[in-house]
Structures are given as structure tokens and as C-alpha cells.
Amino acid sequence: MAKTQDASSSWPPSVGALKDSLRRHPSGWLLAVQLLTVVVNPLMENTAAGRAVFGVFGIVVLALALWVINRSQAVNWIAWLLAVPSVALSLAANVGGQSQLVPVAHLLESALYFYTAGALTAYMLGDARVTFDELLAAGATFTLLAWAFAFAFSVCQSWYPGSFTAALNTESPRTWMELLFLSFSLLSATGLSDIVPVTAPARALSMLEMFAGVMYIAVVVSRLIALATLRVSRKP
Image (cartoon, rainbow, N blue to C red; front, side, top):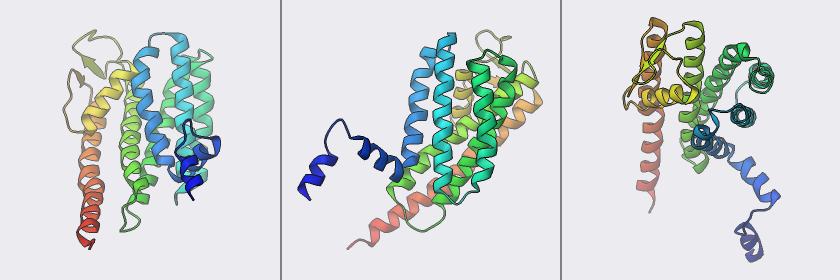
């Protein structure tokens, strides 16, 4: 038993340990990759090579999302139906330079992220226990919703030019990082900051995200907190 504990605490972790961690906590890996994308995206956004790397990050996130869905009770074929063309279009847009495919790729990615967020929400609400993996799933679901709405904003901006304005470069299309920042701001109810939806479709999407953020806190997060508090209070 001591040897097993020493092996599990060694650094760097073995391939077997990483596989075991991925098997037990796919939501945690999904959350970690998405947060890493937030950190590195500002370094990659302004170059063609950087956008290609960002596309690879997106494919990794999609793969982890599929793995999460595979572990849940969701219908797998729906996820694959969204993911396969999304990956193909994303590669063609980011690596092949066919930028006209970006709106369609983002539309499919948005749908897949919404579907994955729904699968994780059903997983968290499926029993009266709070596990460590469910806490990781709570964070992953929040980021999935933020990404899903950011992709929806990107599609809206492509279909309705001028949907969003900001304090700087008011007439220019908003970058992906700006749209993701707006999405996080709305979902967390911290405000719009300097990015504002100005067309009716953009404002409709913004209102839906505000509603989703409030309901996520009210239903999912509050339930997890209540169950965790109840479990602690029942301990002898």
C-alpha cells in the first residue's frame, strides 16, 4: 500500500496515472484546458500561427467534451453529429485559411457546448450526493456555457455586422477574446463592461445568457452548496 501511495505522489506523473485521472475526472481536465485557453489566447490571437494553435486547443476541448458526454447519460450520437463537422470546419477555417467557414464552425461548436453543459448539469442533479468530480463539473459547466454563448455571439456578429460595439475601435468587429470576455461578464452577472450589444439579435442573446447565469447559480450551485452543507452537518 505504501508503494502505491508513493507512486501516485511522484512527479512527473506516469502515463498510467494521467489516464486514471482522466478516467475519474474528465470534467476537471476539461475545465483546466479551457482556463489554460483563456490564459494563452491573448498571446496567440494576433498571428496566423497563433490562431492555428488556438484551433488545436479548440479541438482538444471538443475531444474532452465528447469524453465527458460519453461518461454521462447523454445521447452520444448527437454529440458526434455536432463534433465531427465542427472539427473539420474549424481546421479548414483556422489552418486552411477559409475564414468564410468560421460562422458555421462556431454555430456547431456553440450547439455542442450547450449540449455538453446540459449533460453535465443532468449529471450534477442526478443524485443527492456531492462528489469532488461534481464540483469540478460545476466549474466546467460554467466555462462551457461561457464558451457556448461566446460562439453564439461570434455567429451573431457574422450574420449581423455591427452587433457589438466597445470603447475602442467602435466600428470594428469584436475579437474572439472580447466576445468571450463579454460572455463571462454576462454569465457571472458582473456587468457588460466596455462591450455592448447594440442590435436586437445580440441583445436577445445577451438576455438569454443573463437568464442562464442566474438560473445556474440559483439551481445548480445553490443545490450543490446545500447538499455539501447537509453532508457536513450529518457527520458525527
